Image 1: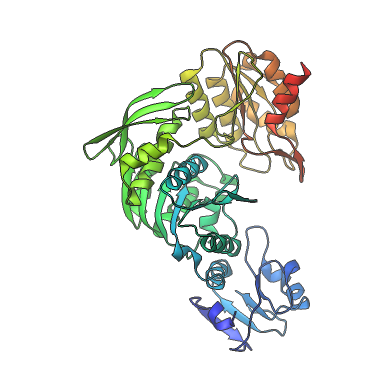
Image 2 (image 1 turned 180 degrees about the horizontal axis):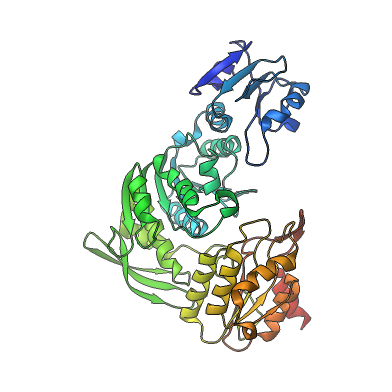
Length: 479
């Protein structure tokens, strides 16, 4: 692509020796990937500064450097205020602004993003739409699955994925938009048709440091969408509404759309939707109280896409659950039930425990831990929640990463003081799962919390295969 076309829309502070007719084969922000002729973007990152790698990029043949500080090397360069934001614009330009060809829907919040996006994808596909999905579990182009390393990809890769979706006929894109992505400009340049906020609870404070910083990062979505959906029940919503620069639609009691006559069963939820005098019954085949808020969020987005609410309710009734979200695991005829859930935050853990309590006839046995190299403040909080809402807990490892597993567990146990007879510690997660199954009795609900859809455990810096479904099956076969 011609350098002038590639730089369109980017505010340039200064430049040096850049030829107007220069053709750029590709854009890179990792110097190790630079090929001759590429433009290298010196991204100022959270961990490191790309300016350090300019000499390496030049040695590999970079033809132009996009930077915030002009380099000492004798190489053509373009200076901008923010290389992160410029990278997003470069991606949009390089791939022909793919987001403009589709209806973009963004969902942000601590919990519920994955469930809402999957529900909405299923609902929209029942109208004949071809839907792309970008999220925690995977990226999907229709039914074609693409691997993913983070909830929201880096901006240049994101634009490439959107281009694939456009080129394969997607009419809608439903995506989880993380606080990191918003703060780090990964979704800059994207104009969302509808944005939705699910909730705000403690998470990612290792990155944002304070809850207010975290909330402000989430609020950035509503400066780049036309319409926004907000839950009135969440304490952060008043400020989110106050700062939003879009038309606002509220859900929950007292809002534009709310639910009455909620009935919770072990395999579904029934409720009556209320909107502007209309009352529409709906049955959702996903158990749990949080299904109500997830369903209302999905329907709120549906409504703000200009679609009929009754048709949305019918589509929702046919939607299925998400892998790793209150997922029932086969137990070969055992008289207890095993559930896998991704709950890895205080709010997520409390929600799943309270939801299961609504329909559990026996005890709740919980297997859980906390991730290493992440916000340590939430560990005792999660321990306290486990002690309060589970009948018995097995405290184990999640993804300890580079932290010592027992140090993480000791942090969790700080919140379980006074409840020593309601838990045991088993650091090895495989052994913890087997122990829970041996303890299971008739009508008990065994919840394996924290891993969800993940099929690995991160020990040190190495990903080791660990699929809890396989572990349950193996444990039952060993009996």
